[in-house]
Length: 353
Image 1 (spheres, rainbow, N blue to C red):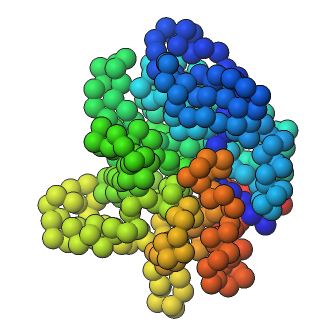
Image 2 (cartoon, helix red, strand yellow):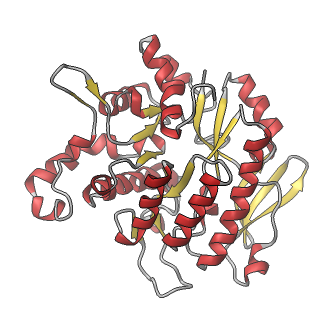
């Protein structure tokens, strides 16, 4: 069985949001030919997509071809729109979440869902998370690695995930037993990376590492011990730089540890006194495109914290979900864990799901 934790979906249609909300910057779809559309921001083409982004039947055909039992659906991160006015962000989130929940409801054995929530207003975000979990049956939310500065409010700073204002979201997620999947967007240093697709190749891994470090050093995991968080793309640059991060913690504790004096390595997998593996405090997906990188994840986090993730249906994803996992030498139990059981445990899915 394969449960793919990291896949993206959109409705086929939605209103012209620039006109609806009265200011520009929102995504619209231009269905310029059958089974294809352009994601447009103003007059700029953001991305070309095909009908497997919005058509559940096409998705299930692809899933059957790759022996994927279930996809976990979340929106395309450009739709986060944290820069928008809070109530417009809430309205957009509700549209996306209602659509996603309808797809899950129509095909409950093939799809599970993660909501999107308007993090520019943590109280609204917490309320929408509660609606999505309690009323729509979604299993949590996908969020960005940071919250954009907002030109429509007095907040001019970008917020990292350690910011105290986000505590209502963490509190709600913990109370609701909701999973939080962190996906990078609006990449760090993008203005210096105009060529070579560098925002996706360099900026995204850096963004994810920044989010992990912010949550660790900000003490989020200490304040919310039951919070379940997973990070996309194998944790980005974090696994490859944990040695530097750990060293910095020891040599400059005055800078690293004003909010949390716990060694960052204590959040990773370890052995207890009986020699048993204790998995990491947080989760990552398996989307690293390299067997040595996957082995590193398994060593750092343990199989119980690494979940199959493909980034379906986009080109930087894994074209054959689970192929990398199956290429690495693992026991039958470990392979089953990474291909399906980690995602099931992270989401709180029943064994019969």
